Length: 329
Image (tube, rainbow, N blue to C red):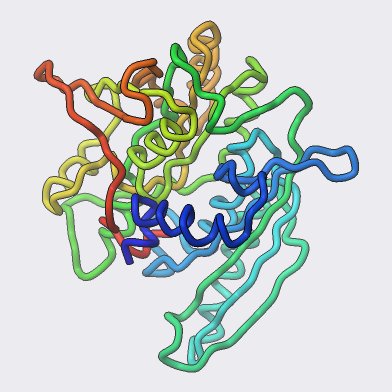
């Protein structure tokens, strides 16, 4: 399970098994989506699979995740998503009305995100060989001219901005799993971020890096960027927005909110000259109202993320090794 958690084990699997087997410069970039040129047009292309348990949770469903997760991966290249594929893997015995509910949720999310499900596939596996419904989606979108967003572009002096409160999705899923109760309902932040990214690009096309911190949370995303760009990242721990219900739930479960998954947030590395204007534009958008500057890129400790604590100390924010919260997307 740790190999699917978005942390160090996931990284080892990709870098030592998949990347050498597949080869190619596009894959070597290890971004949320591949930026490629086809017929003179710049496209972003991404794929994702969804195995969340339960299928419906406060604030969303596996259908919402399938659309928004793929749309967001494309948006992290600056692309506006256009078309999706969708594969349903169904377990023998799953009730048809449940399949219909998931399909309706997926269709509604696609319409809300402004994308069309253009092709798909269905497979059925024997009872006991699945877990009700798994989904796979792939998406393509257009990258605007002059936009070059990728992890390798982070440079010392960049300002690190997060679009809102972290850890909400992971806690929302856990709150309806295995009888866990935290005393207050937490709803997933699952949302399509294409409109927020467009608002940021309207300020400047020179956004260096965008990442949606899903599996492995904010900590994994920042570490991946630091390694890809060979830069250090310094956070102000108190500046990272963690809502009280998430903080309390993590305290009960013994988790660090920095490692808990999000499905409607992004982290941006922005040139200092544009940071204030980008932050203002984000705060004017409904999905960026709680955006905050949380740190900066530095030349020291390349490939490492550190946080300055409220007590004046410094701690290393490393990649998670295994899986804190399995099956959250």
